[in-house]
Length: 538
Image (cartoon, rainbow, N blue to C red; front, top):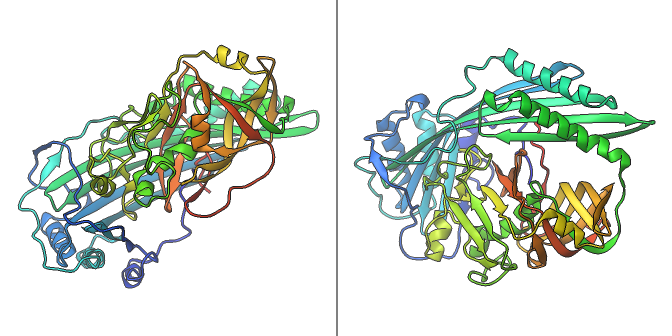
């Protein structure tokens, strides 16, 4: 899991249109899978009367939109959609008691996707003038050959639930109020422990307005807010320094940063940092592993969840390809991917194909029930999309992605789980992991954790790697706690060059054994991913 890269510069609109005839170089994305007869079209939720899509904020008329859609269908594509997006982002950074870094970024553009069977043509433009949009449509249409298709006679708005603020919550907040949040957070951190010598803080927020229109006559619009705050500390004790940090993120406005939330951020950032002064090296070898509630869900997301995304099953590159209906975990294990949890980072009202968000059970009582589907994979497997077709921005086409992935409560208590172990480790936070997505092989660096000795938590540990295989770990779960927690950190999931915000969580979980220590790395072949839990702009 990795933060989306920040480009050093953007390709000029003119050069984009000149170069995008080369796949991958500047916006034309195409995939060719096993072909089936019929038309690839996304499934949609119920509709409400809405004669035309509202494109006023993009200064695009219905007549122009129809013209672009007609160009996209001119070569015989089965289906096309237009995805308009405008995103405003602001970030403030504080160090040494002063705001010393800041930026504001505005992005706007349109992506056009054309489907022909199971082939996809995609192009985008950052300019919404007629010439640029028609050129993008023509590029995307190159995936198809055949007679042109008609554009819809009328449009209907898709009804969506609302899981976060439906209008701007940041446009009226002035910079002084944001700086005050950083000042207050810094003061709380410095007051927490005299060993803290340096504090680095960041506060970001963005709001993304989306309108999608498709050749079936559907239109979907959404407004997606997001905010993230992070605190990084450097502490000194008896000539030794340690550093650590903490971050939180939600689809929320300024009211998220209430005094109690700022205190919680300060307490956790300081706790994680000063804990390292008493940390000892961890054991080396195979030992039982207890994963703490909340952020340990990163192992669930990375080493297991990706293998349940249907594009990998369609390509037959995941270990779960032929496992639907089969046991893959003990009977007390239940795993969901849920886009409907109010305000959480991975929640969405609808996916980027216009499918309504939902709560999808991946594992039921240890049985693997379904993959996460976008419209293409759903059609391939003859099932209904799960509302999992997501994209980073208008520059990318949608693919199956996780939202908020978590394991629910089991029958055990945390105390019972720890008491069951003679010697092992309790892993609390992770960073710098590497995952082989298809097979699930992974290494994770345990940033903070504890020894378990004679059924009790012992000394803190650090600089510990755990090495294993996600499906094997899932099968080797021995106990699941009843203390389920959703983590609120700013996780961003990277896949196929795209980063999307996600959430994760789990209760305390015991794994029978795992390899601890060493510096072995996953072989870099196939679908491979590095991750970090900090979304901090460079």
